[in-house]
Length: 444
Ligand SMILES: [Zn+2]
Image (cartoon, rainbow, N blue to C red):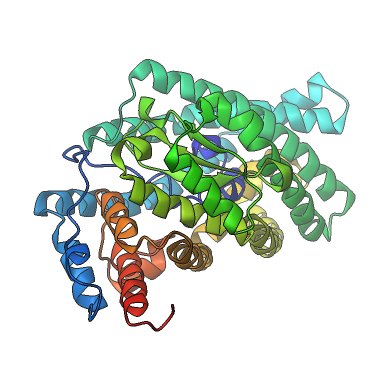
């Protein structure tokens, strides 16, 4: 579901809010290993009587059910992902400097100015060219990370035709979205050259809210077929859980992720009237009813606690600070390196590559902060879900299935830096602690 973001770094923040935050698992990591079976992981802790349960021991027992090969694969996949992130940042910066140093960027602007006398249209025309050229330049890395690598680890089920079709849809959406965003943002910068970083952040946030609002209805269906979950006891239980927790959901949706990936995923998407809970067919296929209930209770937790609103507040702060950094850095970088760029000032759209370099560096630098915010949100949803579904063992076994592709027990620093969800170890520990305290009569 990250497709929207690949070609334009500025949409990273937008997309992060759209796709990652409220899923039980970040889409990029949510996959099942090639050796994964459809059977439930045995639940050693479930076999032990809950009375006198030691949460630490129960957590270890669960983690021990993961075989060495699966563990090694998920470790390699996760750690390779860190490097890939770093390489993507460096590669993106190199592409931006290529556009500036070769004069391509200012020629795109000059062409746009020849084609139209109107500033907003010039900005949009630059945006179209920028998306086309940067997509082309970033293509090798995109194909490697999204297609070749996913196949190598056995997570992708997609043929080349499907992948090309996804990329084409993404390209069209990116052209439309980035052009609109740039017209708004550069309009603001031209009108308020000194304070644009405040108003620009506000405008971007408004854009983000609209995007989040329309995404489940207009964008997500371009990539997947969504339909109501089949009627039956499972759906009844999920909807009953939603009603009991004050969540105004009268439908749960499933979508056909299996045409693309083996990854298990569920999410809450949308905003205000379009908010909805969806789960993918891999989860339905591979999860037991108990596990699916545990996952859906987690998603209901996000919905009930209005995660989307919290994210907007968080991103408001992130955007204002980020744009302030760009405002501070732009002129300095232009003075130092920009003599041959023909970029006039920050309000000149030809300087977009530099704008994005600065924003990407900022976004990378605050990754621990962003991850910390998201992780805290996920812990809340995990605890909410445990209380709502009362399925600590189902929760633990489905977390182990997610652990087939994400290292289950990272070091504390590694988790703090890179994990936007708690590690499997911490999530299972939460569940086992909940179970032990229930049995002790401490909560009931
Ligand atoms: Zn979540």
